[in-house]
Image (cartoon, rainbow, N blue to C red; front, side):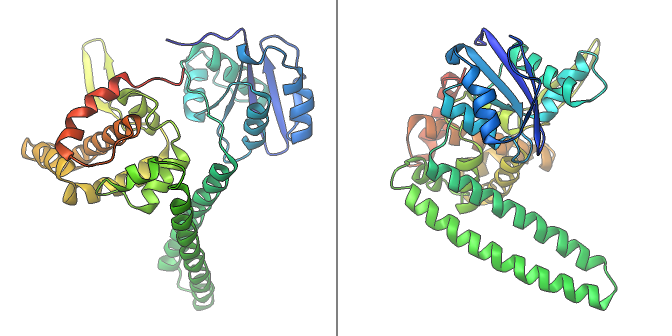
Length: 331
């Protein structure tokens, strides 16, 4: 059931400013995107912190100051998926896009849609998240440069690209070592690390990404967590037309590592392999069978984290996944 807040504040975030739409009309409409302005002119003016909700969009990092300030002030905050907010705006007839309209629709989104609060992170978790995201950035840059190298015919440009690739590979190797060390340190205080590593198919990159980018793991039911990641088949029916369900939206980085983990699991994890092979035997397209296996693996991981149990008995864990339907929601 959606929690009701007396006051909802929608914030459209840019690199140097934020546009604010306050249902109570008590906050300035535009503020600098600085910790001083956000703290003094926004959060210090919120008196009823428990009954006020702040909503902003994920903007690649520009929203971090707002999230930090909200947690420091004890104000519930949701970092929403930009695509979901945009679809919500279009559904309400707002085809145009401006910062002012965006702030208004973000507020309306927070008022009308069931959202998941963004939980606060410890200093160690923030450092871990930053490192994991930096690895993703370097991996993306490396892929881009490798694609450029395959297309260039100029010798000088090719040499420049090769040097960049070499540098990025060194950075990636350094980041991998750092992440492995951080996971080792984190395992001393967070049992989720060992739980994830107990599953065949889950390596350091998958475990690190799930811990950093999916803090809701183990706190939502299986339908909610599948939608959050973007592996839930969504209905596409109208009138007499009932088209095939499709997966869309969600957290792309989590979905990416889950895909790679599932590829390994379909060969080496007894439960996932049996599930995948059964779907293929029934004539399921390989791509669809793999997505279903991703959802299966995510459901099991979600339940294991919720129950605090490692992969000791695959048969038992497979049966216990039904319990995930009663996992508590963040709302």
